[in-house]
Length: 444
Image 1 (cartoon, one colour):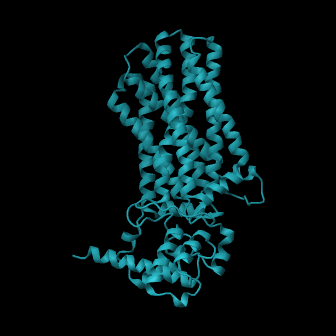
Image 2 (tube, helix red, strand yellow):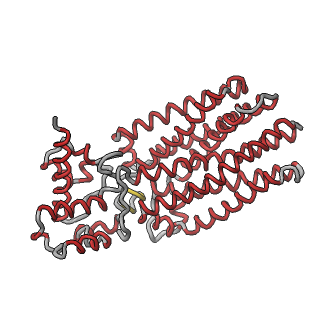
Image 3 (cartoon, one colour):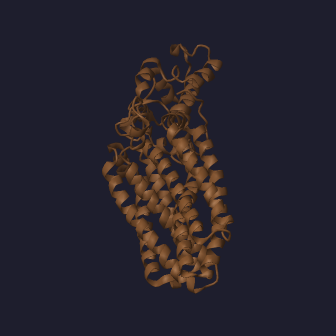
């Protein structure tokens, strides 16, 4: 572990990252699906010579570009800032493994921006054919950005046969690449249809609105087919540890149930939209359906992230930011010795750090606290989301020591213990002190 740990009270990295990433993912998928829908709707409006629909699409395009470009760009930077602080080892690995992929993604991102602005600002200055072509260029470049980023994030869950000696393409075309591209493409079409439906409800009625709802519902139902196929493939290729996490973790079970339920609701609504047109689309129902779509994306991302444990990158980097290949060194030399910033912090306070036989009980507690922040705080806060205090409150000191001794057996979502015996005892001392304080505060 070559980087200092960034400690976030009450929040852990798995919770802090979604606070920034999920709004970005929702808007990014709206950008991808909206590109396809805008290009197709503009084509249809020109063919039908429908000035009402063209006027509406121009208004929507302005709102769409402001939302996806401005908000999407700001939150995209926010994701890099957040993951760089909370998961520096995994971030560094993804940059080095996928240099070619990131460079290619930036090319498509620039093309996406240029074509989006040209599509809007040249609305009345281009012949219909060239104008629609710009829309399809934007849609394709946005979708390619999705494909490239999905290949990288899918690698974190299923690294497959990749090893550091193998090429970029082995990592990129990993086992869950195709299923996740299908799921995200389908989700993009569905959330874009719901977003357009929501936006359209707040504009005056016209003959174009009925056709609009039917057309976007058709696109979205095709997206739901993609989601179904992708989910089936996704479940078939999940690693055993990820499948076990989804079955045994109560939070992941709740998220899976929510995801399934809201997906069925959205499918029913889209089918009704295709059959009945806009008559059933009112502002309250449109808002609720759009929020259902957001909930489906949110729970899906949460399931993907949560099922990765105990890895940041499957089979390569464990959740504390330690490479699997380095685990024997941590056992041999100790967690502190292999963690430069932790060692620097502790040696500045206790020059006799290398003599565990001289540690006092209070020293053990303070050393255990420092080890907790590097070894455990990537997933566990003290209180709050996945807080360690409520978890260990009913435990006995003997149970705490046994749990630390066999971390990965206590909970398969946790990594193995990565230190020596003295460090293990220090962590146990710290947790016992926490448990005593928690039990005392809970007593009547």
